[in-house]
Image (cartoon, rainbow, N blue to C red):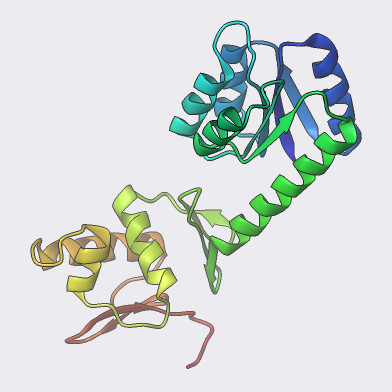
Length: 229
């Protein structure tokens, strides 16, 4: 069930919109003030935010910037401000869609469905899998056989690069360039240490590798253990 945060100070619009979206099978939380809505948007991990610009405590455009500073959650703006420059500025500030009041609940529902479809398609594109190893790039999470992996930022970045180029041999120079942004500096020992840590979290060793294979004298590659090739 998609979770939606609705931030709208007009009680009647908030009531109608919440009822309409709930009727479409969404789990809706609502707030009438910007700071309350910000808390829901950041801590509640919603799938979508519907945001009015004319809020009593903080202007919605500022709230949009605050949300964008910490989250990539899709945002549909609903407002009476229909001037072209305002629409353009709001979209450029990070809104995913813009709906001018007055609007029908059917139109809001359609916009919500469209944005959620785009989000689902984007998430699928950025979800990488090799065997039982799954890496969610936007969420910066990884799991093995359904169990979440506790990775440091650099371990995640290294795993992401290896999964993105699964089957390809990567040299230590290439890994330094991709993960540490140091194509001509840095230490090969840094790569060795992080590969060792990563192998441990994947339940393997250099002597008994599964996903991370060493190609002696060249580098390493990530493979599907179930693929005999």
